[in-house]
Image 1 (tube, rainbow, N blue to C red):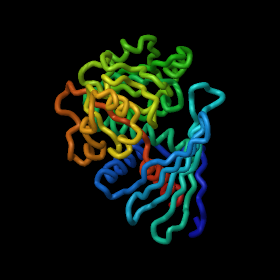
Image 2: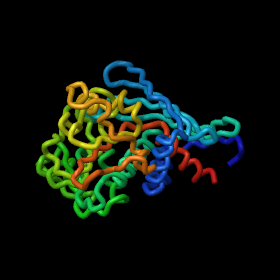
Image 3: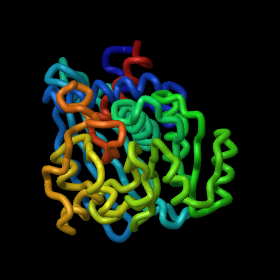
Image 4: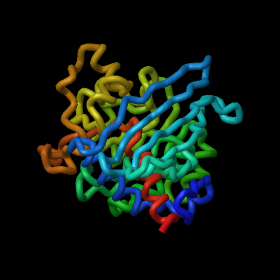
Length: 314
């Protein structure tokens, strides 16, 4: 590349070059650095432009002497899939020496992959080492990327898929040599790791369904309002977040349980980066239920985009 070239990384290039092992490692580094205070980001700001139409901005810096930039993304209802939303946008990267913009990256594909990679990172830190059964709740794009990412951190012997649309669940399960299950409650009772990746506005998984020792990743809701699990589930587990500030502003399930008077802010056991840094234990016993709330953060997008940029600019 020439010194002043602006690298444009489209969706196809993201899919080809952003591998899960590398992205999971990048998420570990980014989350540890966020909790250590060596990276910085602002809370996501959103401009609502009518029903089902939002424009969001997520700026951040990987370090004082590291890459910096912002994710600019639209979250619009998908007319082809009622109840689902598309996240389209760009990650804009700047280099730290002269402040030059050096890359523009397709944000939709980065979001798909890094979200699943972050879930895998958290599962690796929080789930029991002997976890054998994985349950994916949902059948959309994030369900597919989570099915690809999670086996990199645990050796699952059994993988289950549940969806309201049984045909979609069966097709997705067949693609990944998994089992489509009709009874979500029964599936939760045998799962060691659960990932909720739905667009549901109301709880689909209830706390009374989980067995002791389960780890659950809450991924589908990224703003106040829609919740994928009930208040009892949130109250029953060790609740970990990516950022306390972001969780207190936007973690829908946590906010609902707090409003119901079941928990207060101290219920947040810690940031996932604090677990990675060894400051907070993931578990106090094998019977603990652990919860990871995924909201998505600028430093995650920037870490993934920086990984792509370095691999393509070399």
